[in-house]
Length: 612
Ligand code: ADP
Ligand code: MG
Image (cartoon, rainbow, N blue to C red; front, side, top):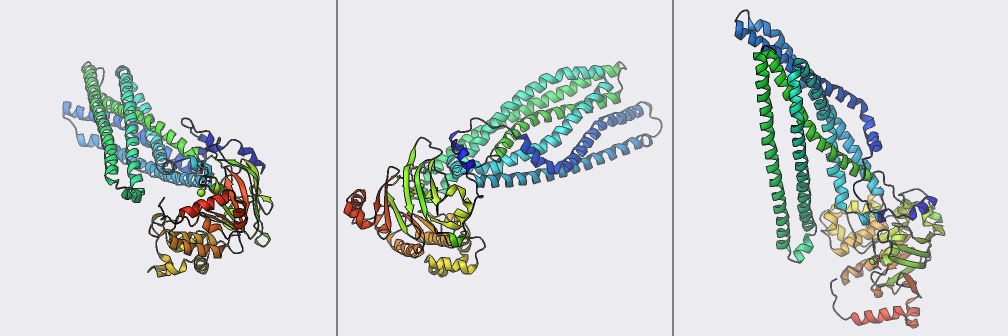
């Protein structure tokens, strides 16, 4: 409890993250540690491949030397003399290929395993976050941390180890050979390199920025399509297909412009770097050639020099690309790790449970005040006091936006009160195990039930993992759902579509009731459970609810007052406080807010139902 109270004061979502968070090296180390052995092997193989690459230019030079000798002298057998060297080169090529194969396989193994571990850890930690966290975040962004960011981090990691290690070794090794072969030429080459690398890096960073803009634009276009397809019913109902088409088209057009710009940039970069590389080759040949002519260098050494300098240049180009990749990988990693270390104020489990036979189901709100963490200055409940006696039905009525659902959320412990306590059988909710509370004590049925895109059977079983088929049937019968389910050709194995889209509102609601009843909850919360239904389904669902309410502590939230007449107590809420309590008759007699609400609804009643 102390922990909860200590963390209560600064709500996590009231301080928005400004800028990017830092990369968490410690966490990264934890993911890397199980793979250190394999990583070591990969590094050794990669270094080996790089060292072989450094050898190759020198051997090629020697081969050219032999060729040159035979073009001059034409004595002896070229084949016998070169056979040794060629065989050696062939072996080196083979070894190089094998080493490359080896380290790439090892790296991909490490990368994939780390990605799986990271996704698991992130998903598990996301699932544990407070509801307040999800109020403040967009689902799409959370999902993209699981997918795109992990992907990006993984490929950066692999690239850094393979390319980075290889390029650095090759640059160092080849520079060494160069300076041995011809110090003067090496010096000239070193002088020419920094300006070229500088220009290349500048262009590269401009291109990367452009590429990021491209990706963002593509994401924006995808967002438009996603929203339209996800809300196709609303789009259809407003005949907005054409407008959505245009919106998507405009975003696509924008992204095409950006992508073409990027394409032109890349083309320019490639063209210029080709010219630069070729000029370097020509320059080396020219200056080196004059050295050969002056007998200061052999032709073979010049050949070695050319190949080695090409290796240096290619490696440097790789390194500059790699630098951008490292930056992107680190920021992707930072996004992945950010939510891995976030701990919720309300843990998922931990605390005491009350054995079922001792559970009475008495609930009290003692002077509870509450404002949502993402709207701290806006009090929703003020000094709210309410008692739900065990086994009784209490109705909570009041205007829309008055805080009724908030009361239910506090009871489910989606949030903790800002002040005051909520108790179950006299115990502070904060001392109880939240997963026991939600999973076994409270059944919650809301206005818009959300089903999962699987079978009816699985949806009902969601309320109690490991429930037998018999238990599922019993719950469905109790919720008046068995009949319509068995009327489907596939029965309990009928797929309900995404979010239950293939069922009617009343059918969905009855499945939701079955899902809540299967856990045999001691406390039932009905939050406007029938208000989205037509009057025929309302009658069926209401019957099921009345049956389910017997013997349970029930909180009925309703704005349609006809549904709460039978409640033992009716509580009228206004401005986040309780303003009247009593039975239907008492409150009518009192002539207060409730009587006024009844009078208004009676006036409205004859009018046809207006869809909201
Ligand atoms: P009711 O169920 O009585 O219609 P609610 O409890 O849903 O009312 O909402 C009470 C007030 O709290 C409203 O002003 C609403 O805007 C605000 N509110 C509801 N849910 C949230 C939330 N998740 N974050 C911030 N404010 C919320
Ligand atoms: Mg509500």
